[in-house]
Length: 131
Ligand code: MN
Image (cartoon, rainbow, N blue to C red):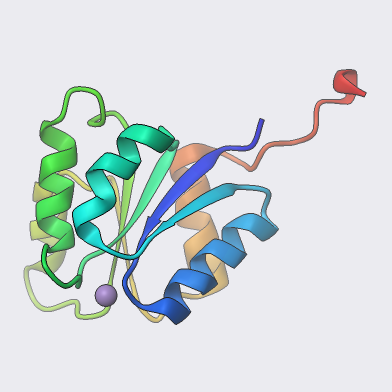
């Protein structure tokens, strides 16, 4: 079964890039454009991984990570933070919020997929016995 990734990103181009990349590697994706919907969508979709943009309108990715990590049902889902502005102290704040991984934009295919695989293992490989 395909592993599932919830992608929280307000920038349409980045959202498409991340989802296309993940789908090309056999992951199932759900896009979330409005951070205020992220927690509910995580509950519904039960993802194996959450890719979290940090710069979001209305609510910051850091706040969302803190909310996820305080939620008993969701805290076990690894979170990969993606941020454009790596100001001094940002990585520490993101890690302190509970993110398992952190990459900065612009992302490369390699960086992105390496970080994803480190958190969820390789993409699903078709089971030969299922044929
Ligand atoms: Mn953003």
